[in-house]
Image (cartoon, rainbow, N blue to C red; front, top):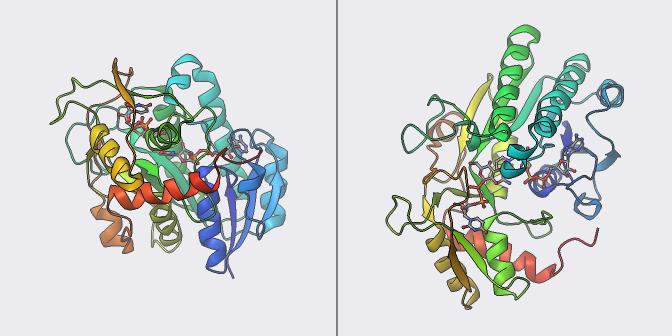
Length: 324
Ligand SMILES: NC(=O)c1ccc[n+]([C@@H]2O[C@H](COP(=O)([O-])OP(=O)(O)OC[C@H]3O[C@@H](n4cnc5c(N)ncnc54)[C@H](O)[C@@H]3O)[C@@H](O)[C@H]2O)c1
Ligand SMILES: O=c1ccn([C@@H]2O[C@H](COP(=O)(O)OP(=O)(O)O[C@H]3O[C@H](CO)[C@H](O)[C@H](O)[C@H]3O)[C@@H](O)[C@H]2O)c(=O)[nH]1
């Protein structure tokens, strides 16, 4: 049985990935400070450690004693707008506290490190679809903090021999049966649309309809969190360190996501066109050929309807999100 330390396992993606690993017989320890995550999102089969990665001695002790085969590192702050107001918060948590974890992992003899990176490391893409070796020039401190940490891992891999996989997710979406999306405040499109449909919000603001896209709204590549979970497990058996873009390759506009949500729920979305949100690129679509060919990753949720349906079921089961 493989032992995995999951940082950020009380958060949106980390909780579903922990569940996925537990279902497959892994022994999972979740390390989370419950800053944006929820105690209720911690799978009861996992061991839970309440702690902050800023506490260098604590995470070193956890890695020394845990004898982990792998670390999966989800813990981070990820609000692009907030990172433009408070870059220090992002570099301290996503980079400095990340280094505490990387040092602890090396000291603890961990052989595999899987990191939640992001499409935001590319900034304005040079071409679509985005490939792993395309130019990476982040346009906000959030993306820069994640790119810096990719580089830390590259050097740690070369110098200390700790193998890593940087998984650059595009737009994570959907839910498992048990775990779903409850960010506070919520900034992501799909949960906001579904909350609007349920009357929890008066209307959805569509940020701009004057982009150079077919219907004028931004195009994104939405990927189900269980397909991300599959990629995390496959990354453990990668023969060497690497970077992988993770999306379905289907670019969908904000309006197409609204249409799909109306189809799934049978209800209308009340929306209004608002000004563009600063820092939003017009189009982000992944080329995920590398992970498909090298690690045999195959996404199971390829349509927007499937992804939205899972998120809708989760919201209906948890009308107020998690209780804590
Ligand atoms: N949601 C997306 O669309 C998306 C896209 C690309 C990349 N990512 C990355 O995926 C990861 C998970 O995202 P999410 O949406 O699940 O976020 P989330 O906020 O739901 O989860 C993050 C978890 O990490 C914990 N955490 C944060 N800093 C910590 C620290 N210093 N010590 C201990 N715990 C800490 C939080 O309490 C939370 O439980 C993040 O690294 C994010 O940058 C997310
Ligand atoms: O109320 C809303 C919320 C979003 N949008 C639009 O919907 C699209 C998707 O927005 P999200 O906020 O759901 O996601 P982002 O594409 O901004 O960001 C996601 O992808 C990024 C990578 O580029 C980062 O990784 C980030 O963490 C992750 O949330 C964007 O065009 C956005 O302008 C709206 O029109 N109205």
